Image 1 (cartoon, rainbow, N blue to C red):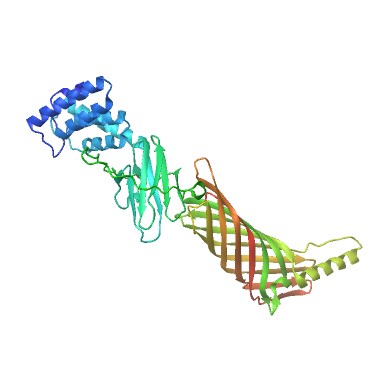
Image 2 (image 1 turned 180 degrees about the vertical axis):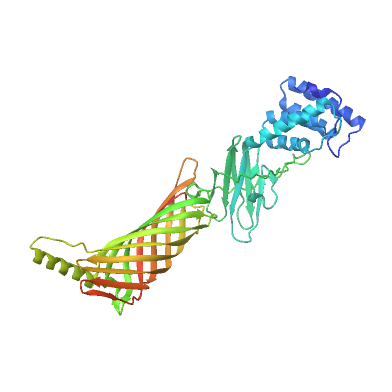
Length: 438
C-alpha cells in the first residue's frame, strides 16, 4: 500500500530540492497512485508514481515506485530507482519515515540482484565489421556485447545489423534469475538462444529505454532474416575440456643408415588423452598423454618369426614369442577451432612432445626415444547438444602427422648391445577424436 507516502515529503535525494509547488503536486500524484492501486490498476499507479518522483525525488517515493515496478516485473528499472537511495548519503536528523524507507530500500535493492535475468550477446563477425544492436527497440551502446545485460523477465526482441548483411532478429523469453547467451553470427551460419553461465561479476547497464511520444510513431521494424533450423549453431563456451584421440598410425621415412622405419616398426594402434583449458572460444591449450601398440615391420618382423621358430625347434614345444612394439609419448598441444560456435567445427592442432618406443622378441630388445617436432593435426568435429542446445560432446575424424628423429637408439641381444643413429621419420595418423565439453 502507498498510504504511508501521502505524508509530507522531506528528505530529498542529493542534488534535488523540490519547490513547495512541486512537492504539493507530487503529493497529489501519490494520492492518485493510492487510488489506482486500490482499484487494481497497477500500471496506472506506477505511472502516477513516476510523475510524483520526477517532481520530488525522495527516498519514500523512490521506494514506492520501486515496489510498484517490482509488482509489474520491471526489476531492472526498480533496482535503478533504488540505487539512488542506496548510494545517497543520509541527511542528519532525517524523519523516522525517511530513515525507514532507506533501510527498506537497501533490503529490496539487495534482493532484486539475483532475480534480474541476464543476457549476453556473443558476436562472431569479420574483423573490423561493426554491428549495431538494439534490444526491444532501444539501441544498445557500442561494446554492450562485452557485458551481461540485465533485462526484465518476459518477452524480448534483439535486432543485430551489420553493413552488407540483412538485419537479423531473434525473439526470446526469459524467466527471473535466468541467464541466456544469444549467439549472433553473420554470413549465413545462423543463431540461437541458449542457457549459459555468464561472468560472476555483473555490471548492471540500463538499456536506457525511452518510450516514444504519441506524436512520434515508432520506426517500422527491420526486415527479419530468419535462419533455417539446420543452420542454427551451438553455444560457445570456455573452460575445462577433455578429448581422446584414437587412430591407426603408419610409419614413413628413414630409421637409420638408409633403413626405412617400416622395416623396423609396423603399423600401430594409438590412443591419447588431451586435457586442458579452452581459454577462449577459438583456442584450447593443454597437454597430452598417449600410448601405442603395434607389430614389428620388415626385417625385424622376419627376425622375430625366425627366433620364434628356432626356439620351438630347440625346445620341441609349440612356443611363441610376441612380435610387438610399445610406445608412450607426452607433450603440450594447442588446438584452434575454425568454427567454434558451429554444430560442425573444423579444427587444427599443433603439438610438441617426447616419445619412448620399444620392441622386443627372443633375446633382442630395441629402445628409441626423441622429440616429436612437430605434431600436426586437423579434423572436423560434429557436436551433439542437450535440451538447452548446449554442446557437451563432439566427435569426428582427423588426420595427423608426427615428425620425429629419435635422438637415442640402442639394440641389445645375447651377443651384446649397439647404438644406432636414427634418421628423420614420420608417423601418419588416421583416426577419430572425441571431445567432452567442447
